[in-house]
Amino acid sequence: MQGLSAWRDDRCLYCDVDLSLPTGTVMQIRGPNGAGKTTLLKHIAGLSGRRAGQVSWASTDSHDDRDTFTQQMLYLGHLPGVKSALTVAENLQALAACRGINLLTHTISQALNTVHLGGYDDMPCHQLSAGQLRRVALARLFTEPVPLWLLDEPFTAIDQAGVRELEGWLAAHSEQGGVVLLTTHHPLALNCPLQFLDLQPIVEDWH
Ligand SMILES: Nc1ncnc2c1ncn2[C@@H]1O[C@H](COP(=O)(O)OP(=O)(O)OP(=O)(O)O)[C@@H](O)[C@H]1O
Image (cartoon, rainbow, N blue to C red):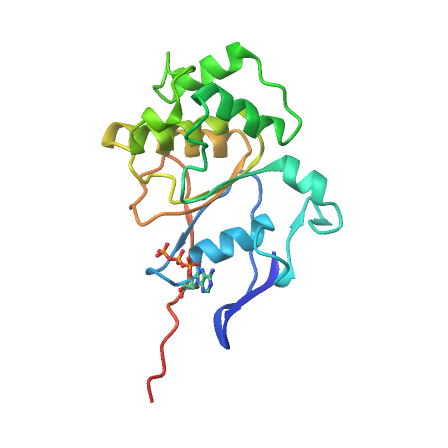
């Protein structure tokens, strides 16, 4: 990523951010509320319209080959992003279908077992707790296996045991050659090297 910049009104949120994320990288974007962490993740995922700077995947500009880039990355936003009227399995199927994957029932059940929602396949999502909804979103890490994970506050509503488990998944993904870029206010304890990108808050000029 080269020269990433974003503005709100006439204020620069982040300017000329250069990042290189080799295979195996886990990087935490840090900064206080409003510093621009979500904006930057969406920028990289290509979800915020074209901003300044270039995002390349495997040496190709992500805008020149959008299809390849979207097939290689999974963006999980700070909201779970599941439809409450659908069941757990229907949500996972619909989301995977967006990238052309036809999920087998067995794959869904396995992923749900991994996130400790085994047997919840046919449960309507409006009946789930906040932590369970988050786990449905996290099940996509296993139903849509891709090298690049862009995760915005993935620990939200997750219990303590789940936090340790998710930390383990991040480290395992890195060991398998994946790349993780995430935001969290949670201090991470990973069994792998962790890099940081610190964003500074905009200083308001009240005068
Ligand atoms: N849709 C929007 N329109 C205008 N300004 C916005 C919009 N979304 C965010 N902002 C502003 O952009 C700045 C960065 O917001 P962003 O959500 O990226 O911060 P963040 O670092 O992720 O914060 P948090 O830790 O609270 O999640 C904030 O000042 C916010 O008010």
